[in-house]
Image 1 (cartoon, helix red, strand yellow):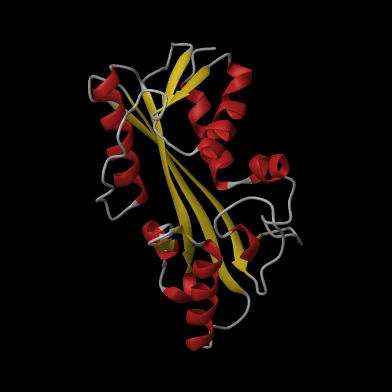
Image 2 (cartoon, rainbow, N blue to C red):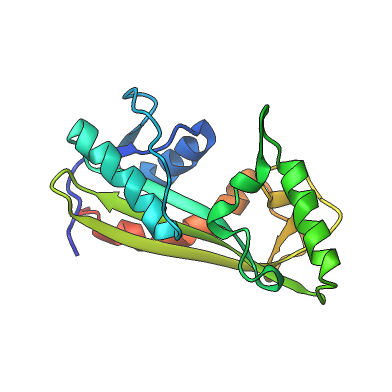
Length: 202
């Protein structure tokens, strides 16, 4: 595994919330971050059919464009009773001409589960794949997962995306009800980060 020896990392995202979350996780290692938006990078088309493929597309595009090591993630929710859907299409389920509507996406999720009379508990997991890419084309891959179940009705106004209908295993609150930093401590992204930090030369 290649070691990361720098003190600055380009995070290949235009999402300010995700940037802040990653910056917080990297802070103890003395690594500062900038975003793809800071470098005026376009968002590459995510044409992959897996989380790792899409994360690689984003990380390598940013590394090639800037000459900097770049970190990208692709994440989503997989629901067993829906054969793993929405998976890599998690954000697509929320797309509307006016932007993303995750209440609509969560309602669709519930409706599809009801249409299949899916038994309870409705097992699901949030997945996150981090890819750290270097300008020379090398990369390292770090997958993370948080098991749980889909609940209804929606609960909580914290977090984002599908958080109000996802109750992580071993907890009574949904991600939408949890304190932001508590969620970040146990999340699928935190699981991936615990693997990522093993490459930092600190």
